[in-house]
Image 1: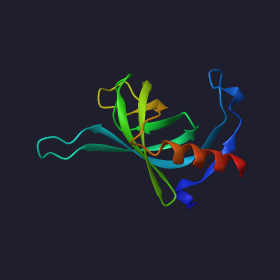
Image 2: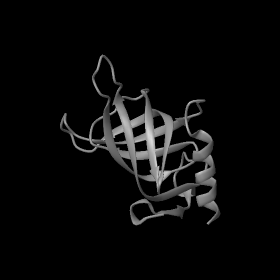
Image 3: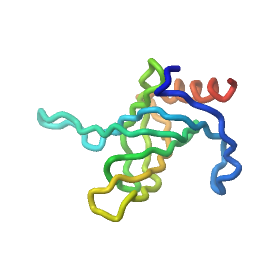
Image 4: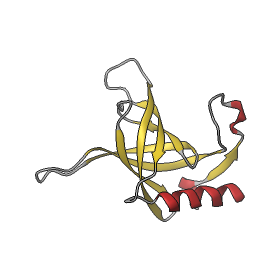
Length: 129
């Protein structure tokens, strides 16, 4: 993995609601917040993440995200771009201004048209190292 996508192990036991082992590091995730329609291109936010697991992730978004929204995600792991669907479970504004970004927690949804199997294999492989 290149320096922009390095991941390391972290003990998730210190986090009270976590039920699985998490990885830390910095990767990039594209979040599609508006789908393409009538000739318009989709609107995608480039977000950084430093907290991943097989079933969820936490990311830093430049815009507020709506809790409950189910959004397409593209996760960049090294040379791979994995397409997933994720539900925004929570979003905490970084600043009290209306244009603030947020820290958001996503639950990864299993879906036939995504890279869910590759995602789970990649996380399992990273945990083995």
